[in-house]
Image (tube, rainbow, N blue to C red; front, side):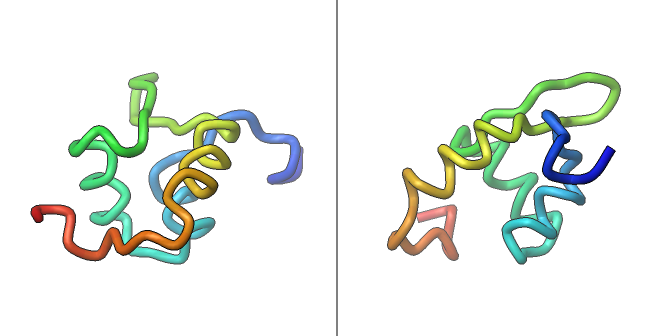
Length: 66
C-alpha cells in the first residue's frame, strides 16, 4: 500500500507531510487544531489532514501558545 492509499497517518508521517517537527504535530493535536484518533498511538485521518491544510492556509501557527 502506497502513501496515497493510506487512510490514517501516524504523527511522524503527518509531520513529514506538513514539513514540521513531530512536537509541533503533538501541539496542534493538544490545542484542538488537528483532530486525531487514539488507536494504540495517535493517528490522523487523511481527510482531516487535508481539511486542516485548507482551513489554516495563509495563517501563522508558529506560536500556538498565543
